[in-house]
Image (cartoon, rainbow, N blue to C red; front, side):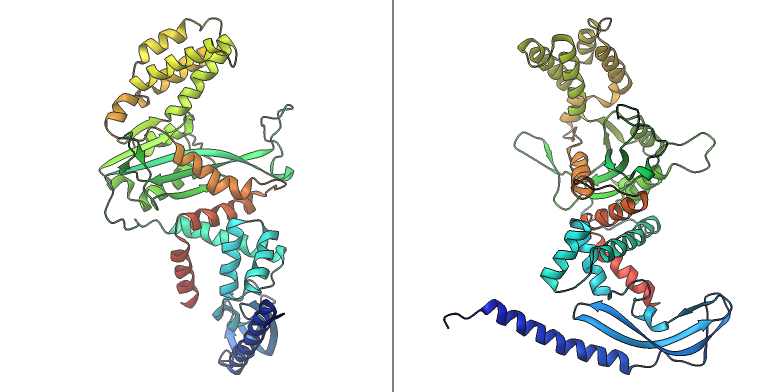
Length: 426
């Protein structure tokens, strides 16, 4: 057995088995001529399309490249043709079998299109180039985005959690220059390099750690996100796109039917406008660590960074915040308001949100007061895939991959695929 190259033997045996299976499948597909049902078939435009013989098509399958001969019909009225077999086999959009398309979607959810192509070839022996991966993954993402807008029935949750949390946040992703024309941003010249993805996350946290801090329940997190507007004018007849997204996700998760509902976010005005519009009876909580960051920034502005006096002042303010002592905290800020702009801004911030900063009360009720799950969602659902070095997105491409990734991470891809298959079989 010395010198035996087992890997080479294994690979050769696999290739031989695939070739045998591929020939069998190809023969079975081409032996079936039931797609030729007559000299004419109705076209989508309503006119009759004439049978024009059998046309060949090659496509990539899990068994390798297959060749299919199928009936072709041509419509004189709309000057286009179609093959009924393509739709029956879900091959009308791409030269990829459904199983390969599913592989492409799974790979492109995780890594770049180039890396996806490499993984498919190395792990599955499927040859799909990077451009094909991009087109197929983005098309699949568009299907998922449309499915998300249509499927808003409440998902079954057994048992129903006593508390559900809904968080909102945003994170910028790099865009192509053509997508940024006329948009202001944070660059020195006032231009933008990114656009904001807005994310809504829903989760439960029924258990606690040894310090009494709620712990996210495994498998309870769901995500929905897109680059879209949260702004609504008084004259608008419909809520903003992101507001509608938040409502759909809340409906799917049964947020309004949960005994205790909590909305978490940072200080962004649009978050609390949406919370007040959709969930006025829920508990509204501003992220405690976000407030502490503001207080630490004030300390640095007053005493300078990285010195004991600054750190001591910040610690006292943090403790007052944790204990629910907002009056002495505000008095401490007022002492520096005339000479320190960050202190003035922090005063306004706390006054606007003080009902959302009752942290001692919230802690006594065993509630989360941090948006850690939401911020992690921005990194996991968005940043890990769409903010890698060298990436610059189109609006349509970004939203497609965001939809695909949120669907996978929320554990909904299997349900989507079953609905997709059922629709195409109808």
